[in-house]
Image 1: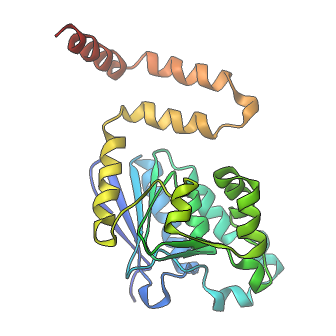
Image 2: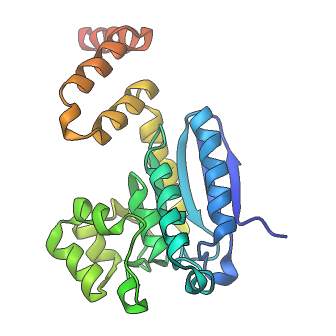
Image 3: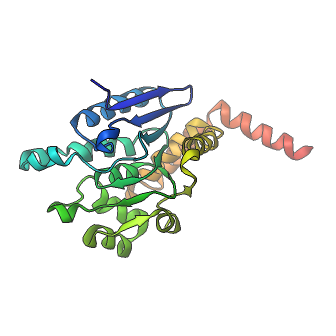
Length: 245
């Protein structure tokens, strides 16, 4: 049986490859289980995560054949929403490499990432209402935060699908590159993140995701932790020495 998710391990990053190309990487229970397992690995050993789809498609949605048979109890389990929220809360940044279709659950997986890089062929949106359901795995609230209420309503209520240029203009995509360059662009973004102090990146992400009522206390506590690190001292010393030259 072919693995639904292929994992490539590196020192400071990991690449997750959605691997159901014949089904346009539709997200089924096996893939959800594999994503949970992959999350556990990077929760235990924090690294940058890159997510890409095999076969020229990011993820065309949830597996409709499985979704059609799900009833109330399955919805209340939050099968997709739970794993996407876990991905969103991973310690280090996540980068979605979005080629081709990212629809429905595939779009919600992309929304859960911290960065999204597309190609000219990227199509991203949520056609759930056309299937008699709602986008319940994060889009109904996360998309509002990403693009604002007016455009989110066009996508969620009227079924609008954004092309790459439209998504770039509203910063739903951080960059658009030719499809052959997508993996390299993801590594370039990972390099930028890896050049920062890892603990500072990790705590900054945590602070950014904290509820409004937690500020400014959580900011001060996180800063207190960073003020005590050797890396802070070394990086600031190097900065001051460069200014003297």
